[in-house]
Length: 406
Image (cartoon, rainbow, N blue to C red; front, top):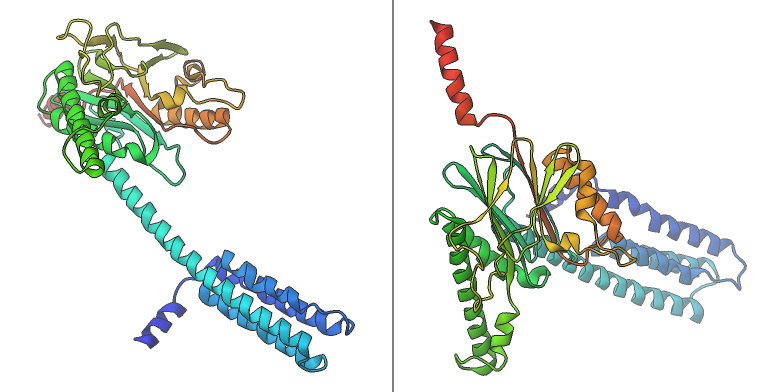
């Protein structure tokens, strides 16, 4: 088994770290030669510790230990050629040996932490694929592109969310923003998206769907508060301040229905930033809702101040582009404190297509904030394509092919 492992190690592809080992080895050779040529009262042996010290930056503990051993051997060689093992050389050899062992232990711990971080990142990516599934590039007659930018380091998901599905001859989407940011809000986001994916196919209207999502979120928040009470109080009784904590958890959301045939879109806005409608020529319109509802999770408030049976109706013609986003985009601040002017910036990119538009916004947004966002940000771009629906294309081709055969 050991022979097989050694053969496997020999057949592994060459890695850049192997070539970098020449740097500490070269340092050992140079320091040793210079030390031997220097006057007797000049001792350069302590500089040999530099070789094992820099090795963990590109190699593992085994290579670090070998470099440390080579440095100790070089120090012994210098002592042997420069008058024997006097007290000075003995101290240098002992000190270099101890430091090399400590550096090797550090390299081992660093490698362990590196593997642990790789596992955590793998779990994060798996969670992203389950919770925040990538949107398809085509949904019926719509071209779709999505982008998520997490604020926390090493995080790929956070409190922002989006999802889309096909419901008969209609595309149904949701974009939302959980209060807070980063990994602590994934639980609330996953609950809402799970409820949306299930209820979107069972609920005919947007406002009915909004009510279903509201009940799901409130039930989840109530269970969360009850669980917190058991953990901290030892009983299933609400703890002091539980109602206030419940009110502080909410989710802004925008639900959209886009039928395949009608040049309109139906919207239900639950305290979310209004989307932008982009048209050729640089025309950008902010689609402010006439009757916005409160965010999801505000369990004591009514869902709509207007007619409960009628969603907002907005135009969406062929070639139009709809930009959905979370407040992490428009509330992104530059170093001078100014907010990101999304509506003004996108006017110059109206003809870029969904993917190109997101590429321009992402690059411009990061340049505006100086390279790092202060909050999670998500965007979804939807463009109604002038091309015919695939079913209609099939109907067009059938008689044409039949006539050709006749």
